[in-house]
Amino acid sequence: MNRNSLIIVISAIIIVSAGIIAYDLYFLGGSPSQITSRVVVSTVALPTPSLTGQMSVETAIQNRRSVRTYSNQSLSLNDVSQLLWAAQGITDTTRNYRAAPSGGHVFPLEVYLVAGKGGVTGLDEGVYHYSPANNQLEKLLSGDLRSKLSEIADGQPWVSQAPVNIVITGVYQRTIDKYGNNNVSVRFVQQESGHAGENIYLEATARGLATVALGSYDDNKVKNLLKLPSNEYTLYIFPVGFPQS
Ligand SMILES: Cc1cc2nc3c(=O)[nH]c(=O)nc-3n(C[C@H](O)[C@H](O)[C@H](O)COP(=O)(O)O)c2cc1C
Image 1 (cartoon, rainbow, N blue to C red):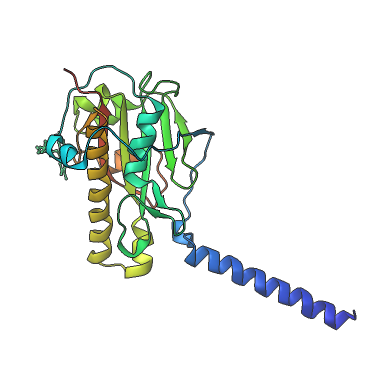
Image 2: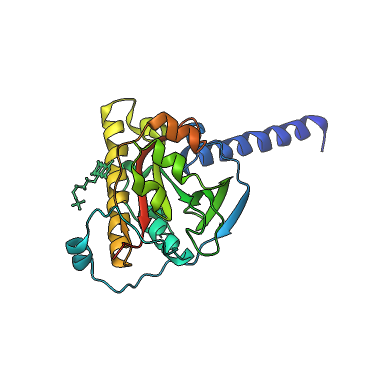
């Protein structure tokens, strides 16, 4: 192969590779605005979510209530897996579609677990990011942050009493990339968090757990406490535990 042919072949390889990377970034769920900056300390595999339960969806809807007092009984890793799966688990592996509907299937939501000391059997206290693709927890921070989270949630005591809190955030830019920087994109992300939140309520109810949707908190302080990536905004906090009888 002469020098010119070699240059042509190498150029072709570079162009095709750049095309594949660009395609992956923009069409397979990773445009630059979607790339987040989390430093993962370690990972914890979650049990495979079960698709059968003890309670019908109708009974769960009927029984769902916001509950703000919890016993100190720990959750199991199965409980955590089910709750996170209900919020954002992948339910269609062909297209990577999730448990909650998503406007334009751009999936702007991220889910975190703030686990208290002894809150989950076999899981260290800390802050974890839920990875739906791998069905695993990614440990981000160590320590029991529930009291601090309670303080910045207007002092609501159920945040520090619950064994765990689930925090839903939104990367608005993912939706903006598709629908523009307008109120429709903002509305889409917020509507989607409601779907994920209701799934958490119903899954909790079906498992004999209880929760309450919290919208009262200081957005920036939650973001700083959990060291959220700069392009993520807190949408909901759900304390979860076994109801106090
Ligand atoms: C957007 C939103 C924000 C809420 N924020 C709080 C909150 O910060 N603290 C709280 O204790 N309950 C909060 N709630 C729960 C409501 O108080 C509760 O849903 C309402 O009292 C009705 O009771 P139910 O959920 O048992 O039907 C919120 C609910 C929604 C939908």
